[in-house]
Image (cartoon, rainbow, N blue to C red):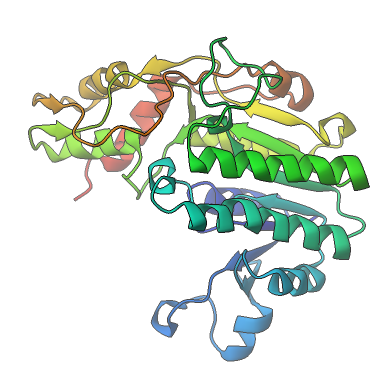
Length: 323
């Protein structure tokens, strides 16, 4: 199949692209235009406009906020499936950069979906990367997809808005959308700005104290290979029952950030102190996020392969000898 993936430079996108390439699919992707010194994948002005073939992938330069560019790119590549991963992913960042978050995480989705609806009448699937942040503050756990969405951040609000628009397109035009509400993911190799990777990186640095945020929230964590397998299943599935659905992708289990810190302390052998509440708390903190993954098991035949302990040990191995 011809598969167009946004966000291929991100956490999941690169691994997903490589996996699908190995399975024989043709991949198209969008990259923002940057300074020439940083533009290793495009050799000339023409390739900036129409993209160039590179290691089995078709690269196109553009931006999610530019509708006409998106329409031209999709017309040129003609994908059978679109996987929309691209987003500003930091929840904390969204509190102080709300306009940017809405432009990218909501209007960027609208541009991609509306362009696809107009120029790709035979599109098979549009897989959207949503978030459990959409649930916000809940009282029943594990939370099912039928729960009221109560976002507690601009990031969550933008994801809800994007999801609502995709549902509208499905109901009005039969647009083949599939929405994943992903649990907190981990397994990044080079980015230690997120909680698990930050803990591991700081503890292996050996400096005391390790500075972390609020220890009290409970979160459901999903390891990157498990998240990856869910996207591949949705991409290749012929089950029409998944079209139009919102599907939780999580483990169905949560633990507190403090408990997480203690697990990682044991794995890394860190002997120093942890300084909790080193950073400002969220304006509206979510006490717990834990999702029911029954629908994913039923419709996608998916379930997590890795336990949290296994995933943490593998992730720690990425950082053990890093500088």
